[in-house]
Length: 241
Image (cartoon, rainbow, N blue to C red; front, side, top):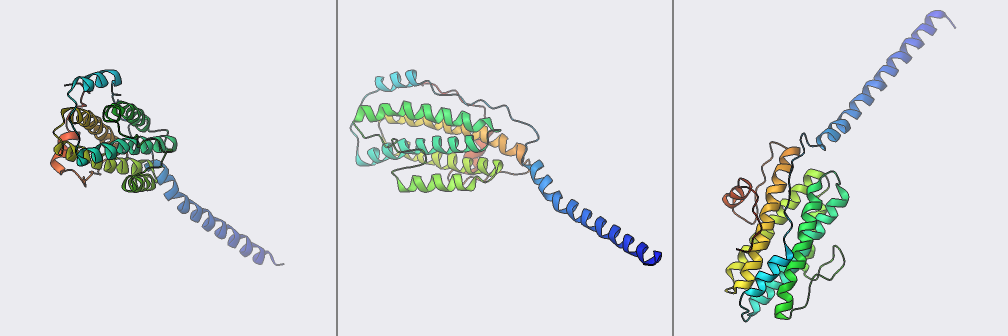
């Protein structure tokens, strides 16, 4: 084979090799960028306070017991199981995204809240709706909420956004239940849950900002002004007042 022909073949092989290398570099680019985006620039320092079960229980029992109407009974059952939804969502995300300690903190706080709230069931002789397996619920709406939120959490930041929507709804539900009862003992427990949910919102917002600084969560169930007032105010102390 003539030397000139051999030289042409070698040059062609070099060109092909360089082209393949360039293509690989381009295909790797988005993957590396995605990995970078999945890591927050800074890790927010957030502490979610766990409710003091004994103190809350004793204060609840010191309040007068009053008759329940059908609406109040339905609200108790619904909100009791809604606390399990919050707990199960955060346990799910705790296992999936272990680099975000906020999920575990919120799961532990919700778990304690579930235990605290049982004092309502004991006082009024109501069945406990929280006895289903993890991720399983009696209430169809609550099952759909759990499935939707966990399904939307396909990445750390998406899990945080979905969690914000879950808290958004829980806050709206609690405020609505407070407006439908004149029982001081129920209002007391619901307000304790509200403090916990507002604190969760305050914890979620900076974590979302750590992943996407330009993103602003837009509430669906509470007003924008209410949401802004929550995340721009400091963490609340869970008290018996």
